[in-house]
Amino acid sequence: MRRHTGIILLLCVLCVLAGCATGGMGGTDETDTTTALTGGAGGVTNASVNATGDTMTDAGGASAFATTLNATVVDIADGDTVDVRLANGTEETIRLVGVDTPEVWVANTPGEFRGVPTTSAGRDCLRGWGHNASDYTAARLAGADVTLAFDPNTDRRGYYGRLLAYVYVNGTNHNAALVEHGLARVYDASDFSRNTAFHRFEAAAYQNRTGLWTCAALGVDGRGSTSNDGDGTTEGSGGAANARGSIDVDAHADAAGPDNENLNDEYVVLRNTGRDRLDFGGVQVSDAVGHTYTFPAGATLAPGASLTLHTGTGTDGNGHYYWNAGSALWNNGGDTVTVRAANGTTLARQTYA
View 1: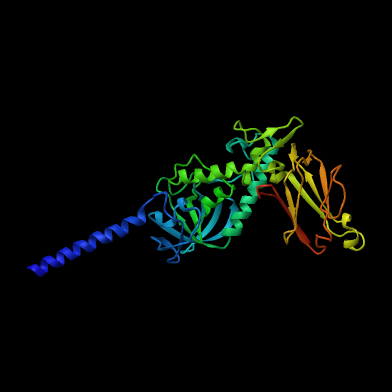
View 2: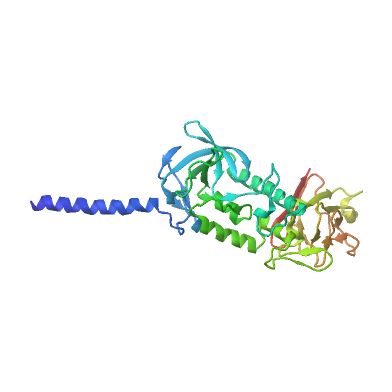
């Protein structure tokens, strides 16, 4: 009798412990850490996880959701929509839950993005960042094995029949990464469980004028983020109005004669294709290996105007600036010109061959 009682007690203890272990997999606490995923090739599964040390800890790891679905990304529609193939061969379109990247195929509505003016410049700027978001998603997800996690607060499918999911790649929540890098806004029309965490990422990106939020420097949003000095120059924390879609780049790498003997005939031309004067103070231009020039305070670029950055020595003025480099910088056989705002945001990038 005692032996039988002991066995029963032991079984009870084991059941309690098992219940505790199982309960942790279904939680939705905002402090769950982002995790690297392992497990089968597809189907619904409770994934086993390993910590990745990802900074977006409050975005929640895939293990925080009751079920996950493994898949392979086969196509990128834009920054927030991808096509995947499931283990059974079925293909599905995934709309990333909780986020909205700027449009690239249709007109943007600047009023949906805090502080971005409802102007041609605002729409152009958003379109440029829409392309950036698409490029970012393609670079991280194209051909990748990913894990889809479904939010308990949202429907499994959206209005157009697309699956609504978080996409995890190498343990990182890609939806959250888009917001953190300023490539998407939080989609408030969705009552998703990670709303609070995503809004924290958006607030930080907005405050730092990261990514698309640099477009807010094109107009006043009522919160003092921008100012106008009276001559039409709009200034913001990012510099150059950060209008990624408003700057064209052209490199003249092959100077007449030996490049090192004619440095001022090696130059880069930057043109303002938008409708607003841009503040270039603090904007940096760099080549593929990291040589960097910083425009001085007070440098501006009027709508439709160009400025020329010469490699050699001279006196700045009349739209001409001088790097004061001692030797040629731009490779005749091909190089990449990158233009960045003072806060490090990429405004334009041009590769030539």
